[in-house]
Length: 196
Picture: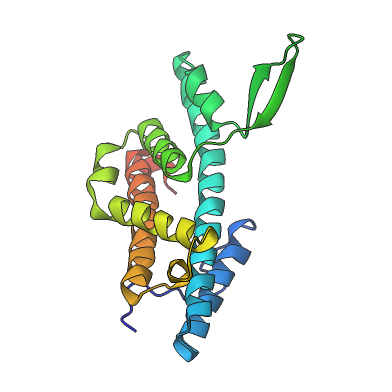
């Protein structure tokens, strides 16, 4: 099987407690695929990849909230709409006029784009460059694949091709590059005296 991005287990790879087990699952799937390239491990890889994506997005969202609040408090310009969209819950009045909360159910692709765009804007990075990369298209294709295997309508939906595996790997390249580009840009904005 052709290999694009390859995940490797190391003590230094992912230190975030939320993401570490998810990353280890992804690596385990890669290792199992190298031993036995089966449909079972391909599907497991796709599921593990999106579990990692969801965890990564949650971690990033938490950092976006902190960055957004910090920046907005300094400028005294708080965008309440964005903060509400970044919340885990949404609120609405019930028939008695009392507020009730419910999970904030925004489709993954929409939420992913919103979180990355908001983080980029908070850190002064041009968000358009994140979505001009073909990786964003690959992320959306990979998401359709994830939906296909988690909600199959026929036996063919459970088959994951080598090309689809590369789509999932390319979607991860996009995700990691976005994170790296945003944070490298932010680091460069820090005055030299403060970097040490």
